[in-house]
Each structure stands twice: as structure tokens, then as C-alpha cells.
Image 1 (cartoon, rainbow, N blue to C red):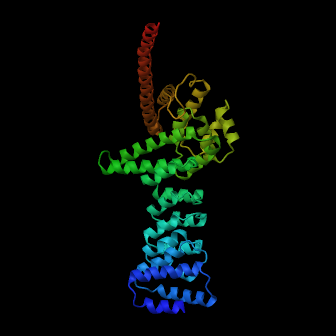
Image 2 (cartoon, one colour):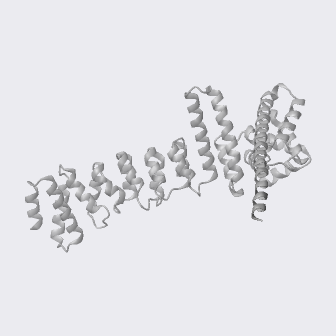
Length: 397
């Protein structure tokens, strides 16, 4: 009887009044002690209201049913496909929408609706994977900002591949304490590519020069990252570098000339496919023939072999003893020794290698000079500070 009166009244009521009455009917459906006949009649009335021309009426239903487990499924599913202003509460909270429903809705939804789905509490891995695969940047950022989302590592990688060049995405990912080092390096590479494109577009540098500068900066940053990488993650980082085409002879030589023997060993193990223990034994064996075979199996260019051979010899001679700085900085004495050795046996095939070593030598010299000046300034400040301490002490006495 009540529902019949409601249906007669609602035909002529203004939109605002219809919305209030619809909200009351929906709450009664959920919370009142209605008979089975009244429940069926109320459900039929609400299904009819799905065709109401006013979004206020449909939105009133959505607001009441947004978090309700006992809402009529047919009503919830219809409203979830409605315009964003109506659908958002249900997309964000309804427990009646399964992952399959949400994936289908996501594919055809308005961007605001997609963001609402990405922000759902207890968002599952399959749904997160779908969002990472096809969602626009704004939605992927909403996913990353959702602390309740269960995001698999491969979904993080996919977001990096698609949107790692965007600063908001990068900043969110870099702030994650549990982000694998391989993903951090991928973000570094994306940043380098973005900077190279920006510099080239501004005509500050030619495309080739900008690309080289970005690649060099990325290599230096990668070594810094590798220096902070836990030992158990080094292998994963090397795998990522190989798969992304970044595990080059230049990067490996830079690591060796910086004294990062761990990265050097792991890189050769990754490229050669040999066990790390065997790779290590070849590198540290006084018989250089084993390393020569390893070098070839790793697929590194034969023209670069003299530089690696001399660098290993320098390490055995203790050239790094007394060196300052960590293993992310080129060591000047080591670079200059390798350069001198390669210049002594120069040939046409070594032209690119010699050019690279000369750039390394300049970089190492500049870094050493910068460290020297920093130490000098620090010492001058300390020297100026000590006499003042003495003066203060005398005044107190």
C-alpha cells in the first residue's frame, strides 16, 4: 500500500522532493521491518526509478546503497554504469561489485569513475593489474596513492614503463621504502630520457649530445644506486639492466674503474650465464686466460678487453689502497693507468675505447679536484674555529 501511494505521488513531484522520497524508500528497504510483499514492491519501485530523468533521484539511490551489502544487486549494477555523479559512490565502496564487474566498468568508465575504482579499499591484485595495464596516468597515480591496494611488483613495473617519465608518478614510487632497486633504476633511466628530450627540444644541445649526456648521467646514478643496493638484490638489478639494454661494456668498465668489484662480478655472471662463484674465480685467478675466455663468453667487445685486463691488474697491485670516496666514483689513478696502458697499444679498433677512457679521466680529475677543494674549505673553517675556542676558554678562565 505504501509503495503504491509512493508511485502515484512521485509522478508529479519535483526532482528535489523525488530524490528525498527515494532516499527514504531506499533506507526503509535496508533497515525497516517490511514484509516480503513490501520488499518486492519497493525493489520494483527502485528499479523503475533507474529511469528517472533527474540524476538527483538516481544519485539518492546510489548514496544510500553505496556501502550496503543488502542492496538489490540489479539496482547497484545499473547505477554503477550511470553517469559519474551518480556512479562514483558505488564504484568507490559497493561490496556488491566483484573484481570482474569493476574491470568491465573500468574499461568503459569516465576518468573520474576510473579514479574512484582505483581508490577502493582492499583493492585486489587482479584489479590493480588491470588498472596498471590500461589505466591513464591519473588513475595509476590514484592506485599508487591507495594504501589499501595490493599491487604486485609486475604491476609497478608496468606503471614505470608507461608513466615513469611523469614526475608525480616518479615521486610517489621513489618515496616507497620497499621499492626494489631494479625499479628505482628504471625510474632513473626514464628521468634521463625525459631530460634528454627536454634539453634537445630547447636546442640547448644537439640530439646526439643530449642523449650522450643523459646516458652518462644515468650510468653515474646507476652506480650510486648499486652502491646502496643490498647484496641480495644486486643480481636482480643486473638482470634488469641486461633486459633493458643498459648492461653495456661502458657501464661495466665504469664500475670496475670505480672499484665496484661486486657489480663487475655480478654483471659478468649475468651476461655469461655462468655461476657467480666460477666467474669470481676467473676474475681473481692470476692466470689471465680464464678471464679472457669469460670476457668473450659475456659477449663484451674484444676491443675493450685491454682496458679490463689492465684494470684487473691494477686492482691486484693494490692501486685503490688509500683511495677516498665510495664505489660510485671513478678513481683517478686507476683510470689514468688504464688509459696509459691502452694508449701504448693503440690500434684502430680501440679508438672508441680511448675516447671513453679520456672522458673518464677528465671526470675523475674533476671529481678529485672537487673533493680536494671541499676538504680544503672544511679545514680552513676548522682552523679559523680553533683559535676562537682558545680565546673563549681564556676569557672564561
